Image 1 (cartoon, each protein chain N blue to C red):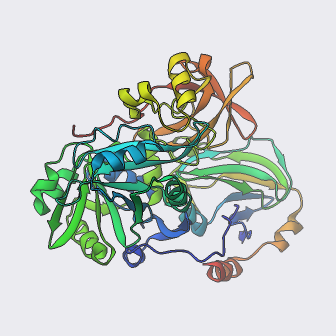
Image 2 (cartoon, each protein chain N blue to C red):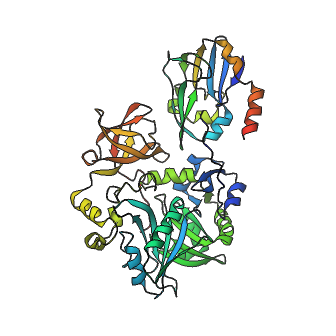
Image 3 (cartoon, chains in turn blue, orange):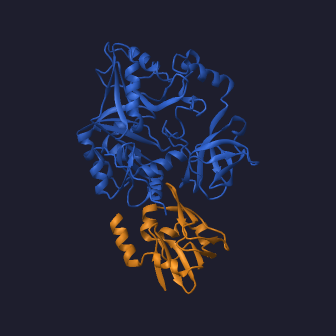
Length: 382
Length: 124
């Protein structure tokens, strides 16, 4: 058996690092951090637990930052960010959150991110951003270099972030904060849990109902332990986070989306609100608008291999007669589906659900079909 | 009956002129939940170090290399339906294939149970 490669670079630790070690997690390098890939029960059990109960994820490695307008005007800060992303920020209600992408001038995706209009009193003109761990330095530099006078980026490296995901998440959180548990999907609130300041949003990366909770780094371990003390909650590592998001059809930056893919190719048109589609005014708008009108030449699709063998990232996608039409960008075993699942890009004429494809795995063609995503139904509380 | 191990964590349990090949308990623990196993066809001739099988966990695919040269005379087809057996009983019901050895002296280059135990200690 082949051993995984090791890197000798010093790894960063999240504020919950000691908790993972105490739980017996297997720690691996991820985006420069020493992160739990799984706990002793293993990825399958963690995945299924999250679908059936509630899983607690440490996502403190992600980048949290605020964009702040000096003039305390939402319009000022919204316009500044709208120059970089295709989402409608201007019409966000206080405490409302949106998924979007930082776009390059050619419409390629520099990163994906969450944007929230801060609703706490005295914070008019503030946006809260959450970006990918692996991209945060580049993202911050990119944003910083493009901000108009009067708008500043404040990175918050002293915050922890955890996600509570699964059908029991609401009842678990309701015992600690009925106000947070009453949120609707993609809304957020600032609350106290056990005396700890928390920013809670109803969102996540598993396809399940759930919450993401930001707090001061020094409070993170206490909050983590409080949540884990509920018998419905178990700690879940990055391994199950990946299989959960893959079954939910959600993109992983650097794999399913990157600088070579546009939001339209990636099937993210839902994240570009009508006003922005029409007005443009974001990097790559010309390409995005053209692809909305004429269709993209290739699109991201779900793929269901017909056998039991998983097709991994990088597997070539061909027609049944061997013509190459695309590439798998994420693939593996879906525990809820109880079989292999994948996503990837294919030529537009091969993208209809049910289209027969072959995936080239270890040199051999495996029959597969284009499948509707998500593979496991979303269970968001709207 | 002798069991020998490779540094890639395969074992071979030799009885007569054939040996049962699988992966060690340490290896299954490192892999995590096994969800798919690809086995060679019976009759295939392998040289020591050849890719003999593929074992896939939720996370990744790993190759299983032939610990010795020989012919595949039997495979554990039960792993197709129950790949998790590799985790549950790697040394027993979770075996991969039976190889008829063509060069028994190759076993001398492999580790004994005791040596393998030391090796695992040294890397974990």
